[in-house]
Image (tube, rainbow, N blue to C red; front, side):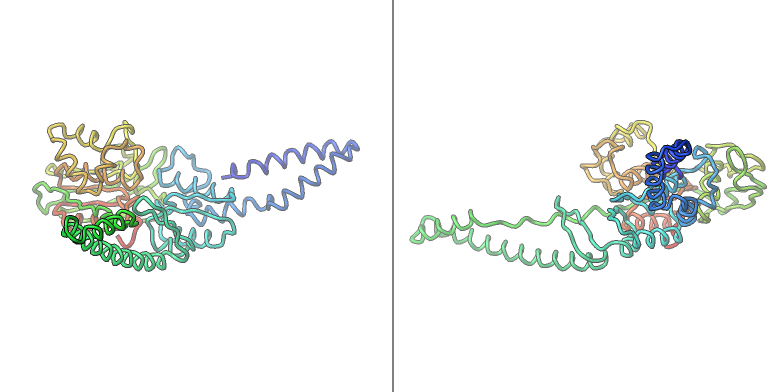
Length: 410
């Protein structure tokens, strides 16, 4: 985080060198050092530690530990460090892409308050509508390949857009009726006594600024997790388990999960929730204790990190590689059902948004029957419609589920 102030630290070092020269009677060095000193004070250089503590505390980094190596942090923790560094740099224009991902409710509230108090401009992409409502006074809406700027809060934007859309539909319908009426007149009279009038109407029709039909709204995803047979017996038993990398982040963990239960693990970011899941699925070894899944358990796992072995592959190729016997038509159908458009289905996965990538991962999960789902922050990157679809799918899932999530509403 101190690297956000690199230029100021360099300026301090230069000032100290100049003061050393001034000690030998070099007055020009003293004057320059004094100017550097003024700039340092103007940029609150001597309050850097206070600024770091404020931002780190607001985003939950103090609980993680500011001396903890980055390499030992989870993806969510690293995202917090990047965000904190960016805020501390105080750029003229701040560009934030889904900044609330990985943030708990209190940290989202702090970030909203922080951004609202900023004097400089910022541009935010987010699917967290409550967050947007608190921070935005301008909305740039991308629809029908057009960017439209609205003034006001996000709630005001929704109201205005709905009214404009309804007005456009009325105008479009009226124009379509007029076009149909004119075309009918031309068809009936182009060869009769009113041929001249019909040709005039045709010219009017040709000159008309025709409105385009609005595109259908975005695809609403649908998820369904096929379930394998199960009983209500104990599916997972955990005894005195300790998890971590170089040292335990969680220890003496005891719990059991029966078939059909749906369990959610909550807690502040960095407490070790993801580490626990990675231990249970065998990605990392346990440090102490033991755990055992029932012999009848077949796992399905959703990992929060969007990492692909071959990011240049398309969603169609990715699904086809996992299911080589599936015909392309069915691959497209499954992707579309999960909210992936035909256009995105043929783009490199690495070029898609986080939400689209998450839907592809979700699609893969819906194609493999299981009876025990383990999901790590599955709502990260998902828009409201996809979250609702996932919520419904999990409620309908007859198997067992163990989830990590920071979203209380979910």
